[in-house]
Length: 82
Image (cartoon, rainbow, N blue to C red; front, side):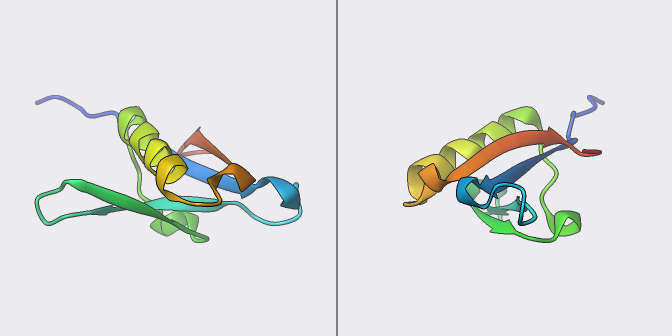
């Protein structure tokens, strides 16, 4: 059985806040069949979705295209322990 490398989170910071406010993390929404449907950003790191690098990139791409104020945020992939 293949071991899937799922150990990444998508972290987002508002650029204008600098380091004054804590970051938010991506929670991926999926259909019952497991198909990617979108992303919401939440404050609770423990409830964030743990992803592979490819899934994390898909979440960033979706947020960049679909969120109207995406240019106001710095979005990046971080390793689970960071």
